[in-house]
Length: 253
Length: 253
DNA sequence: CAGTGGTCTAGACCACCGC
DNA sequence: CGGTGGTCTAGACCACTGA
Image (cartoon, rainbow over all chains, first blue to last red; front, side, top):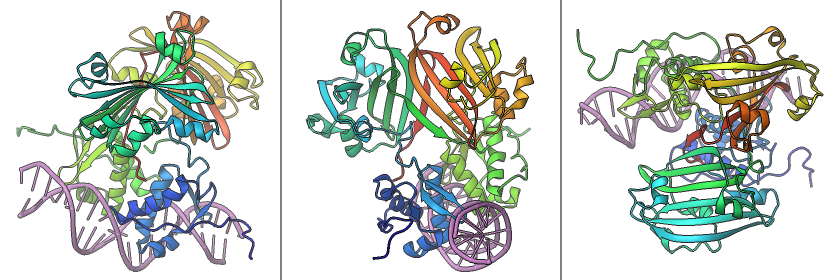
């Protein structure tokens, strides 16, 4: 039984899935264990030459995959030391589709959600128009509240285009919150986030247990699949409790 | 006089600056005209093979530069059509170091700023401690207000580490606002943005011409040069006026 | 010193898609 | 159809930096 002095035993690099360009396959194969935690921060990733053998690819191809992972902050590379899993690899960059449920669970708090409203409406309704979905005949409207340790952390106003997601009309979201369900079941190719500050009034304030007029951080998210709008979400967060954090480096220009 | 039917006459691709890797030089050479507007959205960028000749580089190298520009949303590439300047090329991605002055000027409004306070303080002062700069002996404190068409759009609370930026102690920022001056004169390797919502009170509300208690979008930005903190800024924006917008695509994993 | 990534080349084949 | 980007290769030299 040789002691693993420096590196804990790691699962070997996973196999490729055969889908798409080789460098993206290699990227996915390496990103998987990093994101699901089986390769912890600081774990050493095989050298380029080694991956070259493992995957039967040229070094340039392996390099493209690793460069791409480094660009997105999942790994850090340095000459001689090699490539290691980055400290913050699992942190969700601000402008990705993130998920309150996962975020709450990461802090080891208990997560819970509650659906206050669920209704099929037309796109020409006030809600549909405000979200820019007036051209869509049928929308599913949801009002969902998310809790961390039974304390409200997010109020979610959600519209789902039922033409793009017919399956959603039968879904009651009893076990899976809508955001997670959508990520799993609906493809999207483009998203836009708008971040702004707004005062909580009326029901919004009441549900979030805030004094009317309290500042809230609001994230509005549109997603499209090609040209087709898929879903809209307006996410209310109590003022200073919810902070969007992003780290970055200077641009290259 | 042949009519330029489809493409307006464009400046030729600029020369390289000889600094750093070839692909980054090419990237900079192409990014310049895009960002300063001399190549408008939709303008066609020479094909890879053409740039290969122009810059005496191999196609792989040119490709790496263009791929990188496309990744960051400055250009769009499609087979046969070629590479064109993206629609939103000049929009500042949310999590970059952006500059109100440039933003205001882009909307063709007149930009103006005013320095309300300027003072050298110790890092152990309240302001220094709140910004996490307590270990720094000397800080320059500034309170700057930014206007678009004489209407306040941003209030900037600024701390500059004078150990990292000794030149700043003599700078009066009479012609150049601090943010722009810092970008020009101070190197940084890492930055962090925190976005939150907060109510404007007292002087903050008064300067921004808001009713006390109005929701503001606050961006707090730290930058470091290696391990050394360089500057801290807290930027207040009137609630819904200032929106941070980001577009993105699904991750590749 | 030597392992590792950083970069670059010259050429190749292919897929897409506007003309 | 043919121009364009997308990808891949096999090899090369170099720069950094940890052992």
